[in-house]
Amino acid sequence: MLAYNNEYLPNYTYADYKVWEGDWELIQGVPYAVSPAPNITHQEINSNIMYELKSRLKACKNCKALPEVDWKIDDGTVVRPDSLVVCHLEKKDAYLSQTPKIIFEVLSPSTKSKDRNFKSLLYAQNEVKYYILVEPAGMFAEVYKLTNGKYRLEGEFKEESYTFNLDDECDFDFSFREVFDI
Image 1 (cartoon, helix red, strand yellow):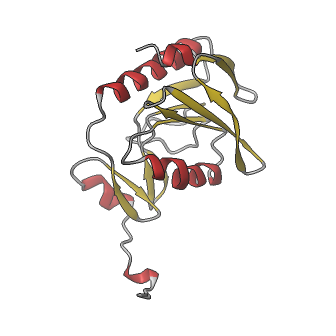
Image 2: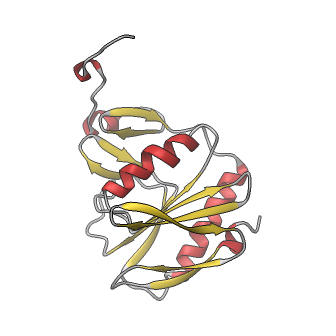
């Protein structure tokens, strides 16, 4: 087996990331290509997620739903979730710099393992309260809630609703029936 030192691995920063062509994520200094343009089903589901979030958050003046925005966690980590909710948006830069309350990732075959494993750990470490994995192939979503630093499965949803509790912010019911109505 080949032994190597971490010094031989790539270690890029946000300054490098900004000038790259194409769509990338940067996780702990390592670049990951974002999958090619999402298919129609992926895009329809993500549009439905955004519509449902925006509809439900209309009454909440503190929280915003955002699609596919860069979240710069630190100088070596920039990710682009499919959809997210952030409360008390601090400033409007080219990227989000604060931790979202909710992240939705619509799974694709090429990114499923990274989303399910690596990003789950990354989001838990950065205290994202809810992480939702949406599976287009089976038309269901898994809702995970951060509890004691780890994600706990709240349930698998197809047609049901789930109530998101954003602490002192907004509570809202989210309909998964609307998400999978394509």
